Image: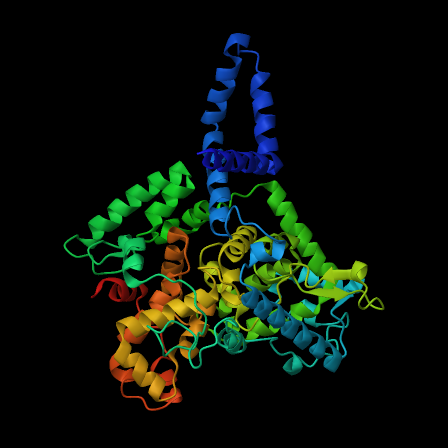
Length: 540
C-alpha cells in the first residue's frame, strides 16, 4: 500500500513539475493576478472569485488537457518507473539497442560518403543575396527548383541533383528488422514463436491477438455506424450525418482531448477533422508559436544543409509525382525545411531507442566538445519521409498550424515507424503483429506466398512504414489516421495490411512469383479503409 501511495505521490509531483515548467503556468499565473486585482472583488471572496473567473475563461479545460497529454505521453513511453541507465530506460533489450546503434552508424556513413563523393559540405552559410532571393520565393519554392538549390546567380550551385540519392529506403530498413536475432536463442531456423513459423521477423515480442484487437477496436464493429462509409445499415445516411454533425459541434465546443478522442473513434466529419485533430494532439497556437516558426524559417534562410537536398529530392520523387499531392509541393518545403532545424524534436530522443546523429566542426574530428547534432532536429529523412506531411495539406491552409500538427504527429507516432525498438507501437512489433495475424487468419495464403518466394512482409512493410500515405487515396489515408489518433495506437496499420492481403486473396493464390504478387497489390487506390478493417477484425 505504501508503494502505491509513493508512486501516486511521485506522479503528482511529476505532473506539478511539468505544469510549472510550461508556458501554460505563467499564463495562468498572470491571468489569476489580473483577476485578483479587480476592484469589484471583496477580500473574503477573493479565492472563490478568482477560481470562478478562471473557470469561466476556460482555464480548467486547458489544465485538464495539459495533464491528459502529459499522462498519455508517459504511458506511450517506456515504463514510468523504469530503472537502470538512460540507454536501458529508452530501450531495455540489449540486442535491439545494438541493432539500432549499428543502423544509425550505417545511415551516418552513407550521408558522409555522399558528402565526400559530391565534395559538398554538410552545412554552409548562404550568401546574403541568396538569402534575400530565397525569402522572396519562400511561398513558391517548387517553381523552377527551390531557392536553396540555386546559387546567388540563379543557377544550380554545382550539384548534380541526379547524384543526390536517398540515404535509405524502406527496403533497407526492412533488412535491419529481419536481420535482428536474440543471441540468447540458440535454436536453428526461425527463432520466432513456434506457433507462427513462416515469417521473417525472428524476435520474440508479445503482440496482441485477434480477440484483444477486437476488444480494443470495438467501436469499429460491423454493427456500428461509421463516418466515411456509405453502408450505414438501417440508419439513413442523412440522419446519421446530421446526428454526427450535431454531436461533433458539442465536442468541438468542449475542447477536451479525451472527449474528442472518443468521438473520433467512429471517424471525424470532414468539416471538423482539422479542429478535432488539434484537440486530440493538444495543438493550441498562440503568438509565441508563430514567432518560433518564423525563427525556424530564418534558420533555413541563413544556412544551407545537405539535408535540404535530400528533402527536395524526396518531395520530387514522391509527392510531386503523385496526382493527389503535387499541388502541395510548395507547402511541403515550408514544413520540411523548418522541421529539419527544429531542436524541439530532439526531446523525443528521451524516449526513443534512437540517438541523434552527431557531426564535428571542421578540423575537430573526434573531439567530443566540438560535436554537434546534425541535422539540428536529429532526423535524417528516408525515401518517402515527405509523405508523412502530404495528407495533412488537405486539412490546414495555415502553414504554421500545419507545421505544429505534423510536428506533434511525428514525435508522438511517426518516429516509431523508422526506429528499431521493442516498443509495442514500434515497427518491429507492428511487423511481427502483421505476420502473426496473417498466419493465424489466412494460413493457406501465407504458406502459398512463402512457397513461391514472396514473403508478405516484404510488400506490407513499406505500407506500414509510411502509414499508407501515398498508397491509398488521400481521403482514405485521413480516415485511417483518424483511428490512429482516436485509439492512440499504430496497431491499426498491420491490421489494415492483413485485411488487404485477405481482400486480394483470390488473385494472390494464383501467383507464382514475387513480381506477380507485387503486381496484384500494386494499386490500392480504390480500397476503402473502414470496411477492410471491419473485415479483418470482425468477419470471423
